[in-house]
Amino acid sequence: MTRRPRVRIPLRKRLLVRLLSASVLIAVCSVAATAWLAVATTTRALREEQGQALADDMDILARLSGYAATHPSWAGVQRTVHDLSARTGRRIALTGADRTPVADSAPRGTSLPPRAAATVDPLRTDTYTERGAQLSGTDPRVVGPYRLTPSERRELDAVAHTRQRCFSRNGLETTLARTPSGRPVLTDADGGAASDYVPEDCADGQLNTPTATEQKALTALQARAGTCLVRAGLDPGMPLYFGAGIPGLSGLSGLSGRDAAPGPAFIKAGDAKAGRVAQTCLEEARRAQLDPYVAPVAELFLGGGNSGAAPRWDMSPANKTKVFGAAGLVLAVTVAVSAVVATRLVRPLRALTEAAQQPPERHARVPVTTRDETGILAEAFNDLAERRERLEAQRKALVSDVAHELRSPLTNIRGWLEVTRDGLVEPDAELLGALHEEALVLQRVIDDLRDLAAADAGALLLHREPVPADELLAQVAAAHRVAADGARVALRTETDGTPWLDADPVRLRQALGNLVTNAVRHTPPDGTVTLSARGEGGEVVLTVADTGTGIADDDLPHVFERFWRAEKSRSRRTGGSGLGLPIVRQLTDAHGGTAEAASTPGAGSVFTLRLPAAPPPVDG
Image: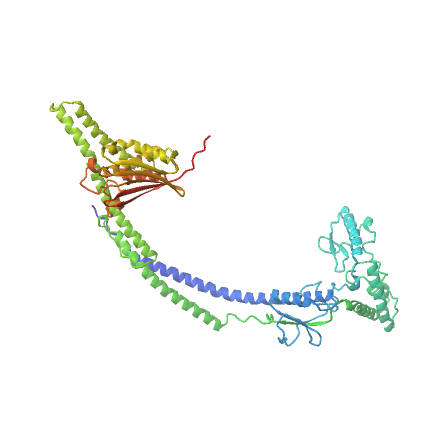
């Protein structure tokens, strides 16, 4: 055999350099990316945290101001405080003007921050109409006596729907909204009031006219403002329009001709000072009117999550030194670990390469030194070499056995034909019968080889049909009854119930027939061969047991190998060709089953076929 030239590949150097290069590149990129991301994301996170904290602070103030605007006292605000604290992660505390505790999310006895974050007073701070900013004025959610009754709401809703339909007929699409007092308002697509332009057929004045509740509150407000105007030396009946600035009444008309500021005639008179005094009186009157409906002024204290701090980490020279030092350390550790791992990885691979380059006839093995993937690869390589060596031996034995099996009948046929041709023997019936028997032997060997070749190629055809196991065993026993009786061997069948198989009956009879032939051949006179069938889970178990000589433990693993005989000196006439049991295994595998053998030397053998069960056919 020509030895292949050994290819010297610098595997250790190539793999080691590639692994180290990849590791270094990954480490450098990872460190650089991590450092950059750490700086960028930390700075961004701090800024976002500041913005989020500020937004949380404004939301807390708006929520508490809304509570104060809709409740005459702080009783019950503790739950709102706890909810806000749980959502924002901040400590929230409310106290009175004299630091008397009202509500606190912290345990009792926890000291307050040194100063209040804000004052909660819905009558002097508007945290509702423009979120994120504290505007001077009254929170629109404070409606007090201007809150509509249910019946007034229903009446105004009907009027609003009528006007909305009227606007729609005139090509104006509006949306119905509701003010805190319960008054419906029509808004346009941009969210603005839809009352700037009112078509003539829609201008009925009903939606813009104050209700009885609103008129009563406005009359009381006029009286309060009049008292203040008298004290200031002004006319208490001066023209005022109460719509602007009154919760829920902005944009109304017909409110007794009164506003939150002096009317146009008064302003034209040029008395701006009197106008400011009148506006002040109106604001004071409005606060006095709404004061009974809101909670007392409270101080808001916030703890934790201080958003006033500047970013605490930047790329200063000291921080740059830390980053590069950490990066260098990570890089050095990565290189060292990669070198150790690469060396350990290359050593067994080099041994595998050297073994693989050996001549095929040497069947070289490699030592298994690890239990990792490389060790598993070495074990697989050794197993492959062992199987290759065994297959090579079997191939040589197969060629020899096939030649021997074909030579014997052919030699007999040739010899008898030559002596007959020379006239030494008369071609009588006995001679022709002997030649016919030799031809049958030759035909059986060829048929066995053909079946094995078809099974190996996956071309073994099966004609499946429902097969009852008891009838299958009875047919096989009947076919071999004469041979068993001639050998003085009892042939019996046993069936537990009536299991069914979906199988090719001809092929199964062939497989069982091979097992019965072997059992009868190796069972002494007065022995017994038993065929049995039983159901076991989703399988049908077929067994052929004999009381013959048995099989040695060392030979048992080889019984299904081709041309294998326990006694190498046996001829085909005494020991068979060694193809019967391999055909049994191939036929069983083709049916999706398994074939097993068990034996006790001197006590007999048991061959078991496990095949998939099938439901009994339904009588049509």
